[in-house]
Length: 363
View (cartoon, one colour):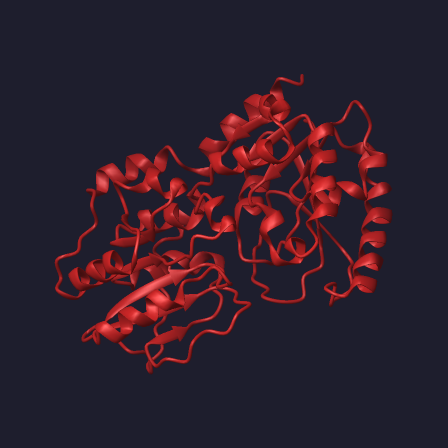
């Protein structure tokens, strides 16, 4: 069985997302060792026995340049001693490639899994030139580029040239069959919560950052008294102080569907930034499984969900959806059987068949 050095750009203890699911799915066909920097914040218990976890030490406060340089040196030294024994090197962040490029041999297959346009993140956006150079060097060397959305593939080509088109494959995000199995684990409700006997619970699950559209949330609260928002997930911005916006913290992996089950509607209220436009929203796959009404901002990557999700383009359309919710005239657009069929074709195991077929071409 071939061995993969899987270089994850977020700690394994971070909220579970694409890198975690792909690493575990790869383990059915490969021996996977996941390398990642030690995490210090927003930690959750992502227990796994499918892959070997190889946490390496890094100093906290890496936002400071001196500490970042030390951490990069530590990473380079740590990985350089391990890399030769692997057949496939899997990279999620071009910045990682800089520190290991010299140790990768011609016989090793290099995969770049691009889940976000990292150039649009604040840590990169302020000084993008170095990152762009790192990204191009990775594209030059890698055998395969996996992108989570068509938009991301177009961005890479527009940024660095259409010469890379043959390397790029679109592997959308998906839903975890493991999460589906854990659907019946019900979260205990806190007694001081505002309950749905009078107010409809509208839930968001995911990272809360600069792209979150609080203006539309606040407008809906101003118009409708009988709604309350529950927000779950890591946050790096201040949440507006409002008695009907309740921040519930970070969910454990097995609790996501339980939180959705207790909701009357699920939402994805994003501003259409360049970063958002490149995202294939994994949360919509999970939302759809809950068989609850869903409202999400309309853009290119959400169009494929239009038969299962209420898409809106402006505040007026969003408020109309909220009004229907309050009046009990908002229902899931599709029947349960159709939802199940959609999700069975959009599991991480299904995506892995596409990836394995690519990697097998190297044999």
